[in-house]
Image (tube, rainbow, N blue to C red; front, side, top):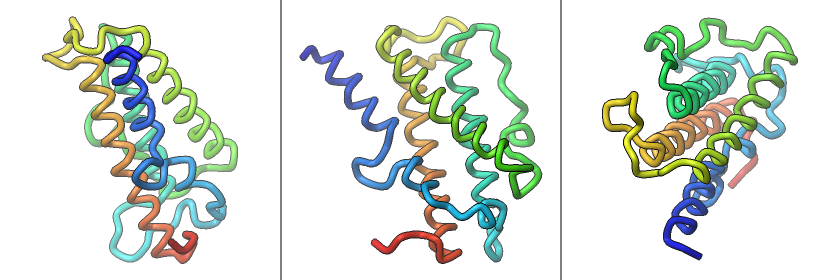
Length: 158
């Protein structure tokens, strides 16, 4: 396996999560519907708001890599939903599906792109840098989802 392919394989593992800690899919698996919009005492967000934030930020990073004309949402207002709970089961399912689908699209991009070449429309960003940022961002917020589940008594024991 070439050095490039080894790097892509490691990036795929990092993006999918679950090596050193629980991944996103595990973090939301079995979450009771009635806890999706709960904000534990003194926390500013719910699991729904974190899921939507992950979706929006991941979409933005993927779109930025693929489209020189992409305009990112306004920070921070357009990266966080205002409502703590999803408007319904369909919205929750759609958000989860988009996160999973676009993560796989980003992984396909790793195989197509020159990982090191700065994006022509950026300020020095490359697909490699965006992949590392995406992995870091998703892992950070996945950990927050797990902490909220622990606070709500809805996380499996270690």
